[in-house]
Amino acid sequence: MNILLSSVGRRSYLVEYFKKTVEKEGGKVIGVNSEAFSSGMIACDKSFLVPLVTNKEYIPRLLDIAKQENVSMIVSLFDIDLPVLSQAKSLFAKEGIEIVVSSEKVIEIANDKWKTYNFLKENNIPTPLTYVRLTDAIESLKDKSLEYPLFVKPRWGMGSIGIYRADNKEELLFFYQYIQKQIKESYLNSMSTDQNESVLIQKFIDGTEYGVDILNDLSAQYVMSVAKEKLAMRAGETDAAIVVDIPALTKLSSELSKVLQHIGNLDIDVLFDGKDYYVLELNARFGGGFPFSYLAGADFPTMLKDMVSGEKIKVPNIKIGVKALKTILPLLVETGDKLDG
Image (cartoon, rainbow, N blue to C red; front, side, top):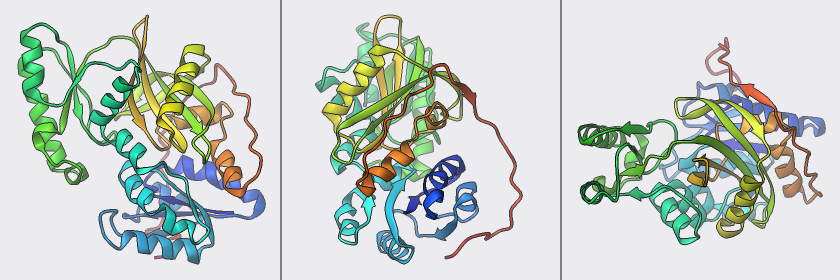
């Protein structure tokens, strides 16, 4: 089987996981990206330069490449092309190509953190009190239904724009305006229709943070989950973690899977305050913490390949206590190496 990874960016470790999945049967991993010179593109067996996701030629170009390279499965590694791929899923299916992506509704809930908050509240899943308008948050601060410190974060996006802690009104206003400016100057500008509702203000909860990978099959049925305690963060991603076995997180994962009905991997952030587990965010894709799940035995790439092939999937035993960290390894390459178009 040949697998195509879209918006491959610098996720070279995910490329290697998928290559290991298909190499036994002589398959290839194809990478596409709007920028050619990235570690993910270099790591792929074959790479293609494509238009930006917002370009009307993106899907036609992707389909041409997939057909040319006899691709059977497509997996996205970036939030921004998930809704575009979800809309095009039936188009690719007609060519016998499976895009492992959730429905448009699920993608919208996961990509929009305000909709995430409302979805979790509607389904009685604990999540921190959140505001989408600064004026509402300030009113709640005045009547003491909300107190400092607070988290201030973008409504959309991943990692590129951080989450800031505000300990007073001066910091709240500064970070709120700063994030608005960052959104205007980034790709997130295309996702924001109202600048006054582009930044979220969230109740601060002190506790232990976890990342959980929840795998559903192609019919959106729960398969398994892997929980990791986050030990270190860098640029919005998990930098070090330890795999844990917490029944409450397994139960939460199963319940969330049932009501959300995502397809493939769902990466979620959870905070434990010593009493309750609060879901912070949903990412309907492979997240930055997946390597820790994989190193513990969660071979989701192979399981997805087997699902698409119609083979019976093997649910692995997870090695609890696996502790790992990410490293930075410089790579010497030649510009255009393995780039085919």
